[in-house]
Image (tube, rainbow, N blue to C red; front, side, top):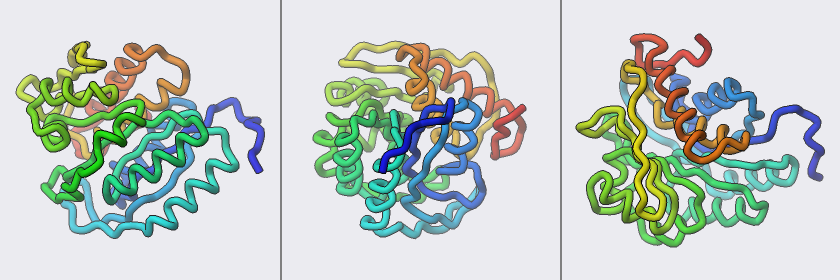
Length: 247
């Protein structure tokens, strides 16, 4: 039974992994959602053994359990946006996307393909283009865009923008901190406003902030800018690898 939203906060969903350090995954998403005054809901795709420095292993949650969790959540809560993070493979991503589209939920995918310490989660990308056509946004960094498209940087983003909107994060580029929103080949740059320090889970923070800002009705470019500024503040919050979300 679907409930009425008696809360003043709109509902938003994160489908992502669990990080014991709290810097990334659903915990980072929960912290971000709270700071944006949206009500977070969560489906866990994996349990990881990691710290902010080292990644040891991933234990995937069974697909059937993930889908059961998602169905239960969607039947009960009116969800406007979902952020998808760490997933086992493209086949599962497609299953999730098809279920979400039945409820007209808009989708942002943060394509986590490899950990910052070099651990590869998955490299088989068969069927990717078909899934991307159904997704509202993807938020790759420069390493991920190369894996997804076979092309470097902006060329890769332009290629994938024929399927979906691409927000290319610049943390791994030569022009550090300069991001690009690419829509149907059109490029909108975003410059870095505030310098900070490297943070574990910064990609999770950005994508969940973007989802929250879009959910709250901000126009596309302003939503991207607000998400970038929020992430930059987290990077500047302290010198450690773990961000402070309330400073």
